[in-house]
Image (cartoon, rainbow, N blue to C red):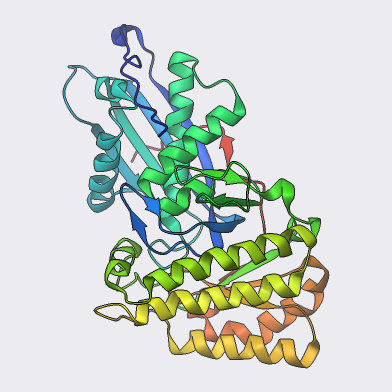
Amino acid sequence: MISYDNPQLILLNAQELEPGAIRWSSPSNLAIVKYWGKHGRQLPRNPSVSLTLDAASTDTTLRYSPRDTPGKGIALDFYFDGAPREDFARKVVAFLESLLPVFPFLEQLSLRIDTNNTFPHSAGIASSASAMSALALGLCSLEDELFGTLGEDEEFHQKASYLARLGSGSACRSIYAHAAIWGETPDASGSSDLYGTPFGHEMHPVFHTFHDDILFISKAEKSVSSRAGHGLMEGNIYADSRYEQARRRLRHLLDAMRRGDVEAFGAIAEAEALTLHALMMTSTPPYLLLEPNTLSAIRAVQTFRQETGHPLYFSLDAGPNLHLLYPAEVAYAVQPFVQEVLLPFCTDGQYLPDAVGEGPVQLEVEEIEED
């Protein structure tokens, strides 16, 4: 099994290190065939495939400087939307400490992370995927700046995907443009349980410009976290059948994406969305994340498709907010429908127009504005 543990990555001249900063923006992603259920250290029970989004993203700046006194553990100041967040900081510190076998030099640095999202966190729009992928990319850039060890793009992205997975499983798919696969499957060459692999280069051009508009049915934090939901799959009596179902659906979905079969793609996307929430409702204890307006919006989408023939489909992540999937060629008809019919189902009439994107991007670092 691949391992990135590297005791050689130690700063021998930490006192000579100049302070620096690295900034990445990384997108969320929407799994079409869902990953739900894991084992070991963030390993998937079934393979999944996702679309990489564009507008739904996390912007993270990692600032570093040598510690005045080298110590054990991680020295971190963490800011979300410009304010300290101790709950987030504890999770990030635990993640970074788990990476010390990979990045032992982190114990020689003082770190500050400033991060923000373009969408609500913990509301079922895969904020952990964008957040952990942005952080993993920053860490790999830091390694490359200090040691020059990750010059090749493929090596850089694979390591970033591997590290992102350790923070949040689905984050490993956000590293790549357009679409990505996570989980070993005979239907995709080079696929792995340890990191995501790109799929955008294999899929039909119609999916490169696909829309994914996100309806904010509720911005409230979920009552059950995705981490807890994955754990409940261990006692779910439908788990084994589900994993086999996911493998079959993945095979059919990849074929549809390669051929540009939008109808087959949409049918699988909707079936997977409903299956995901059915698994939540059959867990022990069962729980429900859908809201009445989620179901009303789904009904409206189905009616629109039946009456117009336009290929508008829905999907869901682990939350109540609805993703609207459709090809660019029908945007002229779908977007007025969203404005006139679907926005009343949204909190404060808000939604995020989004689409398949080009993946993460490294940005210029902005100066910190002091109070």
